[in-house]
Length: 342
Image 1 (cartoon, one colour):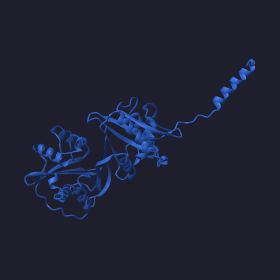
Image 2 (cartoon, helix red, strand yellow; image 1 turned 30 degrees about the horizontal axis):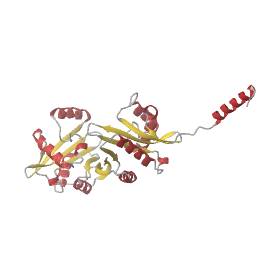
Image 3 (cartoon, rainbow, N blue to C red; image 1 turned 45 degrees about the vertical axis):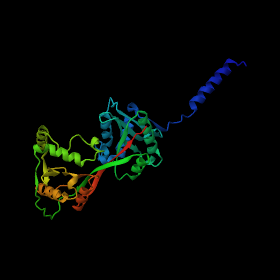
Image 4 (tube, rainbow, N blue to C red; image 1 turned 30 degrees about the vertical axis):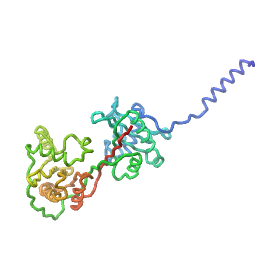
């Protein structure tokens, strides 16, 4: 069939006009994270999702939050850690969901999943579940042996999702808070309490190992608050002199053994006092009140301030004792694990 030149030009113009006028369908759904294009969008999402945890600069100052997001983003620019991977979920042309994957070769062939977040108005649509499934499929392709993640213990929906996917709880580490020392208390004198000495190092290491469940030991920090060297003590002293802070470490002896450890960290001018207790399993349920009493005796010499105590779900006797003395749960994270089987 033959066409006149004018007719051909008209048809070409019509085809081009139709192509230009056809609306583009915006991508929606899941895709791999790209640091070059997604970092700022993910930062905005995470700042909103975890605002209460103050992980971003100026998180509690509405007029400064945007600057805090920029500063967080610049912390990773112009490069991004090669060990960071992940997925984002796109809706309406913007990032509304995120899951970050981190490979941890140093502690075994293991992955961490973190920063699982969905923008509030897009929640309850199955987005988090789909991002988790995509993350686990990717991790299985890498032949990892296990996957770890942390979740806030009050986030029951997320915990149920992770359990549905096969994750199991390992422990919950958290902090309990007390507004100030009771106005009226008469701490009994505690026998067997003395300052921690450098010569206690071996006994301290053995106690910390015994107090830590075997399946959690590889995941805990290499050193506890009580395993401290001479040079670390010196640096601690210098730092505390500057900020008017004092740290006292004590040992509770029973049956000629180191039964428990107590750390009391006090602040003179600002911040909160801190309390850490580690107890050998053989003495749990028998010494907690004495240890808290010893802490009271140290704290009564310091300005009245909020007190925060560290505790872990695998040591329920301490949690019971703290709550009996008026402490209330403040915040924490539940560690969960999924073992990958071929």
